[in-house]
Length: 352
Ligand SMILES: NC(=O)c1ccc[n+]([C@@H]2O[C@H](COP(=O)([O-])OP(=O)(O)OC[C@H]3O[C@@H](n4cnc5c(N)ncnc54)[C@H](O)[C@@H]3O)[C@@H](O)[C@H]2O)c1
Figure 1: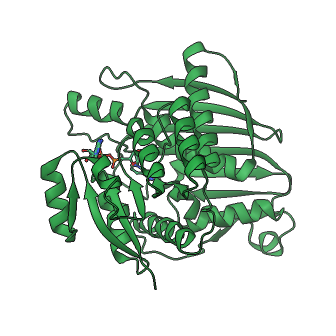
Figure 2 (figure 1 turned 180 degrees about the vertical axis):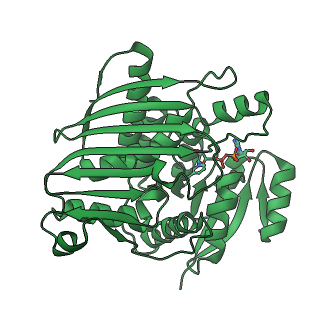
């Protein structure tokens, strides 16, 4: 079988925990090259994973003819420049979320990808968690009737650690552009995937710790074209007992004929439907489409990254469109940017 020759740009957290191991484990790919501006980190990671080619300048990697595909694992403000040069060199792109730090940069990526006809997939890995897949199936097949409300609540550490210095936390929080940009991008994508086009947003953000210039807490209200109303609540906070706060990491969808509540990090969901015989007998039922070891909290997430990488590779090898498109990434970005605009002007923002 032909292997996809891959490079990873940015060797930080997401590269080390998701992209690099997933490419190495996948029989469809060969990880040929790594790139990072931090030479010491680059050398350490390249040695650990025995990757032959190392670059500190992404342009040299993209012009090297060594690779067919790239994972962009740098921070959002750098995505557009890297993606534009990758597309110009005919290299297929898996780009981490959020697509970009503003809409202008997002449009630059769209232009370059469309002009050069390379594959582009956005790194919204939560779409592959088995509970969200099942929730979407239940919605699409009318198991909860007409959706009325969608609610997401996520308490997550983000960059916050209790033992961090103020300066380190501020730097890390600002690096991810705020809690809503960081985690909200995922929820925006999941909500749009499940509920369709959002038309209005109202958001209020706050900064609880350490003179931040970005939000660490967010509440966002969304009106969808279908009249569904949504709320997203996010805070960055490190509460270490994963099980104890499980109910504060969830997505709930209420419809005219039932309800789904789904664990945000997977793998289970709860379903209640007035037309379901099982619900009539047992009430709310817990469904775990794929079982993972509950003592390993990130196992389902790891699985979602492997799935994401496998689908990206398959789309290249079989010349198919990847399932999470540039348009999807732009839609999530538009909702996120509109939420920041709403928070700044304290008013409802229409989403075009
Ligand atoms: N899908 C998810 O669940 C998920 C989880 C975490 C992070 N992310 C996303 O992944 C991206 C990276 O986040 P991270 O946590 O890995 O950040 P990170 O800071 O740990 O890693 C980024 C790396 O990029 C390198 N870098 C910066 N500019 C570069 C350049 N011009 N060329 C080459 N390398 C460069 C840095 O030196 C650093 O090592 C972000 O967009 C983030 O939102 C996604």
